[in-house]
Length: 72
Image (cartoon, rainbow, N blue to C red; front, side):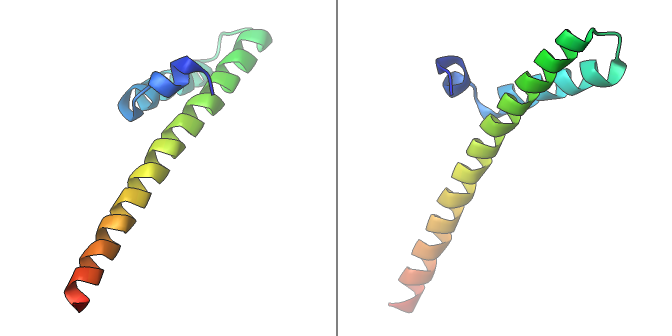
């Protein structure tokens, strides 16, 4: 993952991914441009997935902590 990708927040990555998909769906790009857009979209999807996985882990930890406190 590049420094640029590490600096992207979830919303930024999601918004850029939406734009990439829009461009691909609109067509009118060369094969090379389409491949570059596809690759960028894959990178952005990974960034979004990492953010969502991190949020899920934090939520699971918070819920486990609450359950542990309730048992005492």
